[in-house]
Length: 214
Image (cartoon, rainbow, N blue to C red; front, side, top):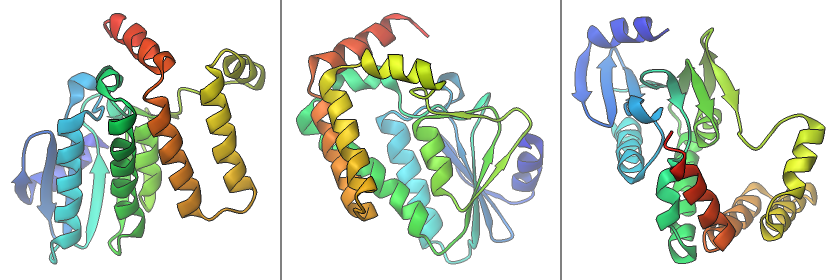
């Protein structure tokens, strides 16, 4: 899959290089997340580059269809967890709001976007893929949210989580189950996520993860 995308892009013109690369050919834009050493995980620079690339895609008349893909061994591993320790409640809400705004622009765009997935597609990376109109998966594609496992493993994991995080997650789920529209559900999730950024449990988990040196 990667070879085919490279060949198609090579026949066109290079629009942008850097954290998010763009190549265009015959009305098709290939948008490539380009942070392979971190499995294309989103830090502040990557988010800004991705947001800019999507804006270019939407606003460029000659581009009719997009293909979104990754570099190296992943499509995208989601958010860069090592950056989360610097986020508190005040920063948490605009951070989560920005993420939803970016994904919403994909979901409501009148131009089709195809996610070409090879390798790991995890957490926020999977949310990005799901926001596209189509997902084409290679033989090595691996999808998942790190929080989900078998039923008993999931139950044990939930029981071991901070009580506030569990309650917020349950509240958001009930908003959806009770018939709340998508905007209400997303707003509840944004607020919940922002609140959790301010807890000691969240910061302790981030520091433990970062200390692993992965």
